[in-house]
Length: 351
Ligand code: CP3
Image (tube, rainbow, N blue to C red; front, side):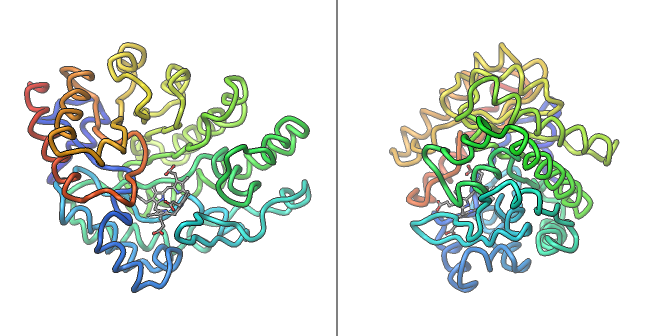
C-alpha cells in the first residue's frame, strides 16, 4: 500500500500526519459527479453500473489528497435486494415502494445472497480495487440493522419514526425478527465486500440516536455487535478494521467502544478530548467537524481544523472526517483547503 496512513491510524499505529477522508466524498457537491449521474440517468442506475460507481468513487481522489476511498453505493441496496423497491429522487430523498406493513411482511423477507442479489456491488468493489492500484485503502460499508429498519418500515426518511417505534413498543418480538434478518444480511454483505477487496468496513447507524438508552442497546448496538462477532467468526484473521458510527451517540461512547470495533465515528456534538479520555485508549476515533463549517470562509475552515486537531492532541488513533456527510451546496475549493490543512497542521502532533 502506497499510502496506509488511514489503516495505521485505525490500528493506532504511528503516522506522519493525520489521515483524512470525507463522508459522502463522492456526491453532488462535485460537478463531475453530477455529470456522471446525469449520464447514468438516475442515482440507482449509477449504483448498479459498476463502471460508473467505480468512476464516481475515484473522482474525489483525483481532486483531493484523500487518505481513503469509500465504495460508491448506498445503505438502501439491502432493502432493495429484499424486494422493497428503492427509488431516490432529487429533493425527495430515498423512497421504498413496498414498505413493511405487517408481521407477515417481515416473516416473508428473505436474507439476500450478496454475490447473486448484490453482485453489482461486489463487481464495483473489484473494479475500484483494480483502478486504485493500492494508492489508498478502500472502505466498504453498510447501514446498521436499526437504521435500515427505519427506512424499511417508514418507507423513506422520517422525522418522528412513529411506525418503527410503534413496533418496538407494541411488538418487540416482531422488531427483533426484522433486526435479526437484517443483521444476517449485513454480516454476509460486508463479508462479501471484504472477499471482493474492501480493506476497512464502516457501519452507518444514522438513526440510533433517536432511541432511549435501553432501546439503543436492545435494537441498535446489540445488532451491530452481532455483526462484528459474525465477521470475526467468518473472516478470522482476514477481518479488516471496523468503524461504528452512530449519529447522536455521545452519551454511549463507552458501550460502542466495547462492541468489538477498532474505531468509533463521532458527530460534531462530541468533544474529541472528552471522547479520547473516555475511550481513546481502546479504539481509534474518527471525526468530527460540523459539515456546515465548509460553508464558511477558507480562513475559518483552517481555524476549525486547527481546533479539532488540537482538541484530539498529540499521538495516535485519529482519523479526520466530518461529523456527518458533506452537503451538496459546498464549494469543492473548501474541501481542498480542509484536506491540505489536516495534513499540514497535524504534523506537529505526530513524532
Ligand atoms: O460516502 C460516500 O461517498 C459513499 C457513498 C454513500 C452514499 N450514501 C451515496 C449517496 C454512503 C456511505 C451513503 C450512506 C447512506 N445512505 C446513509 C448513511 C450515512 C448518512 O448520510 O447518514 C443513509 C442514511 C443513506 C440513505 C440515503 N441515500 C439518503 C438519506 C439519501 C438522500 C440524500 C440526499 O441528500 O438527498 C440517499 C441518496 C444518496 N446516497 C446520495 C448519495 C451521493 C444522493 C443521491 C443523488 O445523487 O441524488
